[in-house]
Length: 168
Image (cartoon, rainbow, N blue to C red; front, side, top):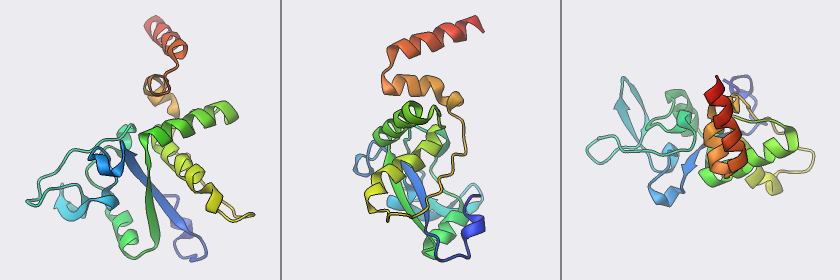
């Protein structure tokens, strides 16, 4: 993925952003590095949300692609080696970042990618002047358009989308 060209360059900080859902303490999130434990499921070993007996637990994220109990074994390895720092963004932060991108750039990001934007916005004051930041905008928001319209509470946009969908 996006990290590969930078793995050997220790001067580049790699940051992964997980799904903070309704908050880490809510029990409704998918931030595996903030509460998951190492286990084996579906044929691979990684961090999972599981109970003491290894039974998988429920997750939550506004982004369907992040609403999963496990994380890539490659990312787990890089996390354990301290090569990638993981943080999380909540659903609320993701919607706020999505609204900002739509308003300022005309880009509707996939909700998965919007987690990265939300994290950069949150950490912006700590980023040194002149630093370069690369965000992986890997998905289009058209697949999430109805969820985004509902989440931001724009009823006129929602009605417009529903009307267009009925005509298709």
